[in-house]
Image (tube, rainbow, N blue to C red; front, side, top):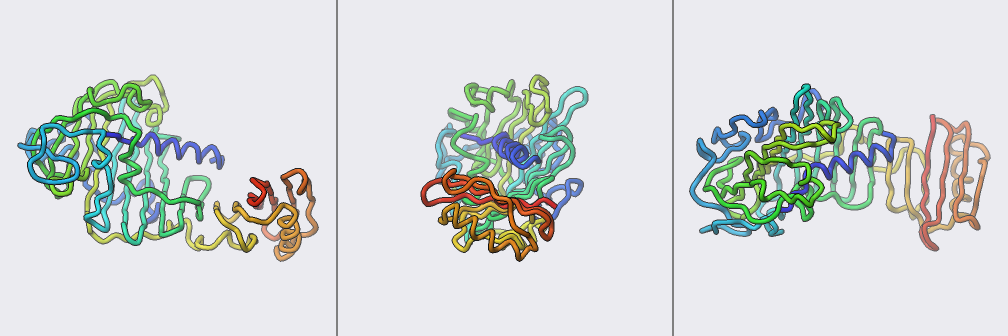
Length: 384
């Protein structure tokens, strides 16, 4: 299997924090995510074989084993092994129009040192909308209790991160959780042996055992895994889609521990559940009113690739040249009580800066850069 672990999501978050100097339903870190199939507080290395759908490691019986395996892409008599490199195994199923996703990712070591990331997600296939809310605790990522929200509704993306507030209008399309969490560049490889039939999250499944032999030691994520003591993948008997991935073992994880040399117990559980149950996906509360570009900051009529970060940062591209952009802002900014700007650069330099002081709401800087002969990048920054 090509499992894109949460490390990749962490990398995106870390880049966002650096770039900005640094959820959808308004939950706080102390409230935690909505109840999902997992307990939300699994005990690494503990007993996870209750057999109840939704319990960590649920396998349908007391010892985690059933009687026959699953096979990606269909139902019926399965083979004795499953190909973990088969991309069809990780596709979003076309059998449902909505579903939820949860993830528990925990690190625990002597000290004590603990780091936890929880995911709570809802997805609607048509019309497309998805939201992923990550809760961090303990030493995870930047430390403390934080929430990061990634939401896509039709053509609009929203990101909410601590210290930056809402970013909206981000170009591109946010992938669905099957693609985000199960992808083509991860650490699990080879074939997994079946251990029987079971159930997870109310779905009848075929169960496959994941072992250390399935860890790609050449993958950056796999290099951090020292031992797998318990590993399972549940695949729906009818439909062949992933329902649960469970990994328990030991390793190092600097993003959860903030110590690249510290070895400890690691618990990872990913669940897909509540298929075809109604979901409501709305802009995050921090993005209320962010459907339009930043409040009163003006932008050219042909603006594209609009990205808003709170009320004071706006970036976009335009087909107008640098001279036309300068002229536009010289004429538009008096509406914000701005005076004559200080201008540096220009058309011949390929870049320009306009500085407006004492505007309504603070100083405003307009940065203009010619990306090509017909594309100009514009960034408008307001400093209270």
